[in-house]
Image (cartoon, rainbow, N blue to C red; front, side, top):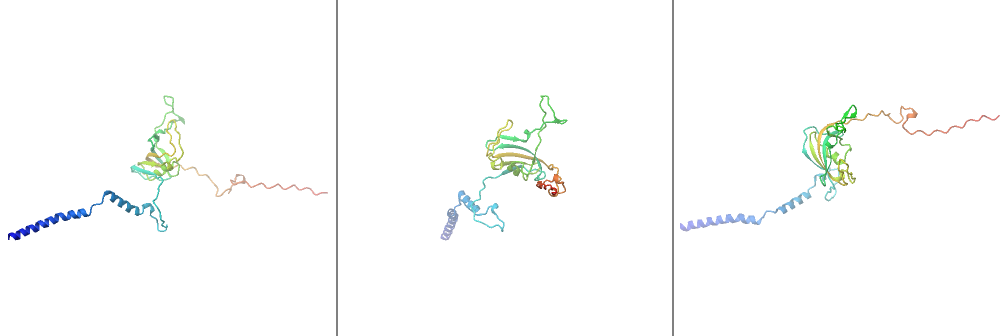
Length: 248
């Protein structure tokens, strides 16, 4: 009996020892990949997958290509999504804005720096100092989406809602390009090839005042006297020679 009990004890000890060593051996035989290896694997997997902007409709032929290069890009971030309606292109957007040069942070313009004189009876109202009184600053009306401002500002406003605030990062190619704006007494200038940063708040959107339509005829010269016809005047016909009386 003692021998049998001793054998059972030895068998149990051997089983316990093998159970403790087997997980350790399996752990050491399959080490976890390092962080660098995991990143490299993820990068190779992502590089083989097509990027979203490369997905083509079936009718467009696929071609072999390398990495897509983007020389510059317009970026923006919504500081606050407005509770109002989304602004429509082709209308007047009333905005509050501040602009900085991205290279050095110099503020070159702001909406509240453009105040207009107060008028009374069609004339500027003068203050006690003998200078014209100035009205409180008002949001700047900007015709949006029709190319009245620099492209980056025009495109950077798209999608804003009334009451919203947005920061726009404009590369110099979508700002003033290679054109330099000189310093003025009341505003710093903008050097050539300057990236810009704008903080914008959309206050309101209104209809643009339509110009009075011109009453034009259906086609040039229609229903108009010859002297008022818009087309070039026809060359005058040469005068016929006067008839000489027959010789007697």
